[in-house]
Image 1 (tube, rainbow, N blue to C red):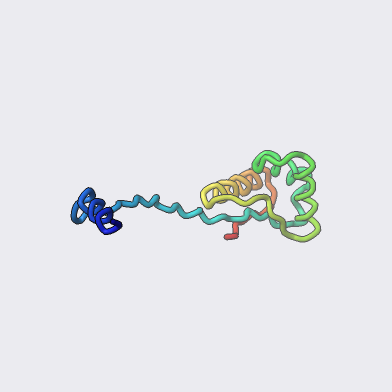
Image 2: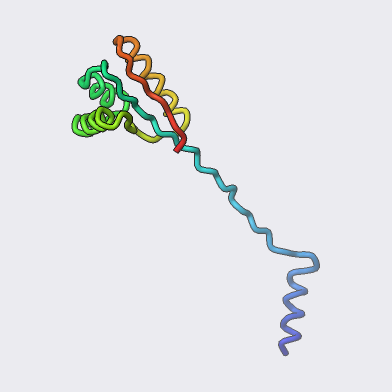
Amino acid sequence: MADEHDQDQDIERGPGVGVVEKTAPRTKRPSLYKVVLLNDDYTPQEFVVWLLQAIFKKDAEEAVRIMLHVHNNGVGICGVYTYEVAETKVAQVMELSRRNQHPLQCMMERE
């Protein structure tokens, strides 16, 4: 009896009929980059705090914490972003620093 049932299913499907599976393409996560500030002995701390708030959208408390970390350790991370966003933020920091006659340096590093 089981043989008849199996044959009936084969007839219904027909020869060469299979199941098509659609696979969704996997998207690769973009590489992330740290935006890093470097300490110097000339840029005022108030300017660094203002910069962190203006460019990186940090609140006053977070901006002060990052500024003090940079001051005490020589380097500090402002944020982690995709390549294009990190590149833009570095350019903004450098431009505002230059425009305000401060030697503050900023760079990006792959995370």
